[in-house]
Amino acid sequence: MDTQFGIVVPLWSYTADGGALLERAAGEVGLDHVTVPVVTGALSAFRLAADPERPYFRTEGGWHFPPTAKLYGASGVRPPKAAWFGTADALARLREHLDRLHIALVVRIELRAVRILGEREPHLGQRNAWGQEVPPAGLCACNPSVRELLRATLEDLGRYEAKSVELANWRPDHVVWSTPPRPAHWRDPAIRQLLDTCFCPACRQTAERAGVEPDQAARRVRVCVQRLIDAPPGVEPSTEADEVVAAYCAARVADCGLWLQRLAQADAHRDCRLLDGPEPPTSYGDLRPVAQLYRLPADSPLDKEHFERLLQLQARDRFAGWSLPAWRPCFNAAASLVFAVSAATAAGVRIYDFEGLDEAAPDAVTWLKQAVRFARRA
Ligand SMILES: [Zn+2]
Image (tube, rainbow, N blue to C red; front, top):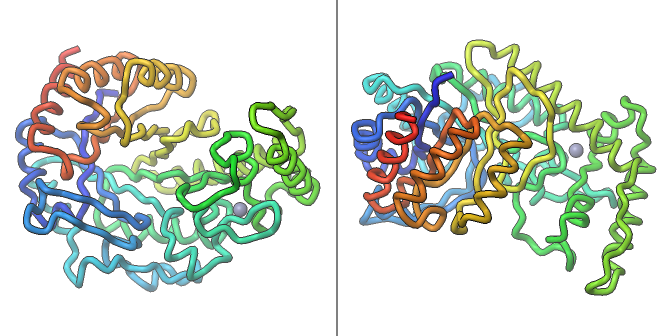
């Protein structure tokens, strides 16, 4: 496969600048695709380049295109339309624009992150080992209504004729919102993983079908968390892998992976991509035909040491693509972006989504042009 270079174009920035940034990037960089977030959680942006008069943008998230209500009947969930747009269909306008530029459309769906949905319908969300609802964890990928909602969203998006669909963080036990208060050691990976393990009815059923006793797994999680919290600072408590908990997690990851593969096979006219990160994801193993992409952390400089670790992760998980910023603070100069893209391409990365151009300085397009040209030549 030829290496494919694309940028992420949020519809609110596209609407604000009338497509100027897209035109410029298409002309100077040469784009194979444009990735458009069409379902997201709450977010805010400061886009001086796209909208210098009104740079601050925020949305509670939801569906960023007009959903066709009747398609969602079977899910029992009404998809919330994002409030920032009225009746205009910016995705349809962008679609036509991309046709004129001969650029493929990729739609990105972050359905698990739609927090307003989790708050309105708590039964869709993850539950902890104490049986409590945890709305900030996001919707549960094992929940049948959430799965049907995703299937209906894909059907609804059919009219935009995207070449690919990118699903963000579609896996169990992955917490979408990590900012709310947590127990003292929540940043400790061991305790975090335990707190984030979902025990919703759908997850419990899936584990039971695989021969794992969910009550026993939940009990083990509670005991291990207590032990980790009780350990005095500086003392490593014994946290040897608990077999029951590991089997409980593995059963649901396997079920989710199979479901994704079936979904991708049924949706054969578009390629299906899975986007994870910046937390290194639990491996799904071989997910073909689903291509696995990794999203780099955007808020810290990618120094040499971080980049080495990233290449190790790439060597281990063989991601088909990366989603990464094309600007500061991740990269401090054009040369570091050029180096990173070339090294990643040499390490087997074949799909690129460059993020945040609408929030970067105009120079970012020039940096990107150099990085893409260099990687293509190599
Ligand atoms: Zn669950």
